[in-house]
Figure (cartoon, rainbow over the protein chains, first blue to last red):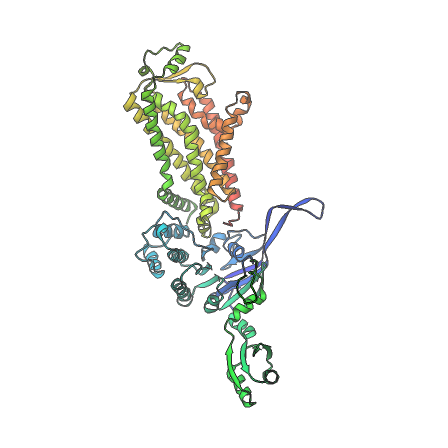
Length: 328
Length: 290
């Protein structure tokens, strides 16, 4: 396997606030809040890497450390072999990014904004800028002030700013946040095109698990500042995606499948859930051969959602639901 | 890109931003309005009180026009403008440039680019110095032109007490020498504003909102200015940066004390280096969380 383009090793960030506690030696020490705790990540060239985690898990802090906005308390980040602490400029030359909502000088035009931001990275030719403006669908509006842009146009301008000059690694934090369905679709298409056609490595943080499933080949799930799950999407799918079978004589069917395929079959409501996901045709054939009535057999749809929910806890206050499932 | 090339590029970007920001032009408009008001006041007021004070120092004027001329108007209008208005404008501009950008998120967008943080802050500082110089000479030019057109020229008479001379009486600068004195006064005042800009950048490096930055900067400035107004704290004056910021007033003394001006310039240079170095250090170490 090739060298990772982005590597984070033992990345830790402790924020020291204004609250103090008595230290073990009797003195007074600043009370720290550990936002990221010994995080390790590897993103390889060509990856579309999904970075997932609930609110408050440390995603934004991690991304800010990767981009040199926040100094890690411990650990190191390297991009393209350049250590961010000692070779910050060389490392950041390989990166295009937007963190949270893309921010612009509202009183300047889209083109002026792009000139400033690309200029900070060394500048690009007018032709290159025009090409990117066209690519993100802002051609004809680039000379309007950003203050009159819609949210979607600002997101596109944010993408354009990331692409100038052409980066090797694109770090996108919630790129479809607040977009309408058309905007979401177009942004996803653009990300796919960048990964496929321009061989760009993409580090994508998103709450939209379906989006991550569609776009990414590798993911990491962050919980309380630590990576709790990391791997290729196909590996994780193989290990965790279930197959649902609706069949009569469920206990007998479960025993048969366990014996024939070594599958763990769990009975939930009126269905059997098989883990790991098995070849559906073989399962179906085996059940039919043994005279079971198979009503339906299907792959689990929102498997990544389930995996995410099983492994993470929300920091948001839970909504109270009444017995009927409505909001109390 | 070479460090100098990067600094020039940063200055160009700061220039673009400054020109595009509407609030950049507000101080120029305010100063133009203030100059109009000053001219109106100078037309209407008889200056009898001032004439009597001058008489106390054996300088007798028969008419207002004997001492009220374009230079007199400019010098006396400079006091409130350079002690109050321009510091406010510089503090606001500095706050918007760094803490304001942090608040808007554009600072974050800049810092994820391969740009050296200290060069970014230096670029902003240089642009603020240019802005202070532009404001100073804009108001000086406007005051001089409006003053000369309305009241003509003549010897410049100033009451020492209004210009912190430390001596009683009045100072006289000949009409031929007055324009040069104003030129140097503008330069000295701008040097003082550069220190205020460095202080404002230091505060901006510590806080996350523009409003917080300029409120703190102005609080510090006016607190020092208040200390400077208590005669029993005279021993403290040499250590206050505002003392040296106001050294431009010396340009209107009969005999300019060059030694004191040099000392003030050294003090201002010292304050500037310390404040700017602290601003750069804090900005380099700062976590951008906004």
